[in-house]
Image (cartoon, rainbow, N blue to C red; front, side):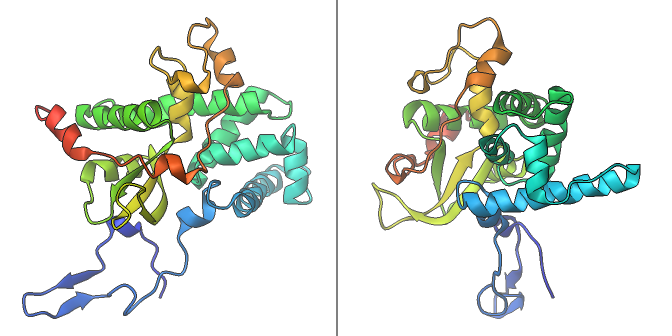
Length: 271
């Protein structure tokens, strides 16, 4: 039997008062064979992530071509060569998906429409990802004041204060609101067992902010100046298309970025 589940949102075992348990105990009864976040996130393994999404898009395109009676690409590599202006444009597309296949379909289809018969380039991907973030992702928290403030708090604490695109949260202190941001694909789990520079004995979840957060920030006056964004330009689309999304492969920055949820809940105790 194979089980597909969101690990930290799933309870597979129930412990009774008598010391017995009902269900399946991870590592004892069952083991984890594959963590999709580890497999699909570009930051964790760029080569494997690119190969997955090449094959993923290829299968979808071939299916449509056969349904319509169109000529189809012969291989995933040919599809990338025909559909994208250059190799790093496809890599930018993979980054923008944050390892989520359904987001990949949306961004790819919208980018193709925007390119309108031309090859998809990096500016097209960035402007499409910005629109997708605004219309699909950030809109999901607009009706929940607490979630909206939590996302703003994380962005302010991680990007503006710590100058990183990631944050850490203690493994033994899950938070339902952070989980809701994860479910809405506004934050992503990069690793489940890392240490902090300041508290080496503690273990943390390593979360990564969504690609769209950076793109969205440059349209505000509160964007992080250390990334050389240009907030005063009139043409937002032009700004977005030229923006380089910050990468964070340096453990020195994110290992200092421990999210202080107690501070957040004290500040917004009225919500």
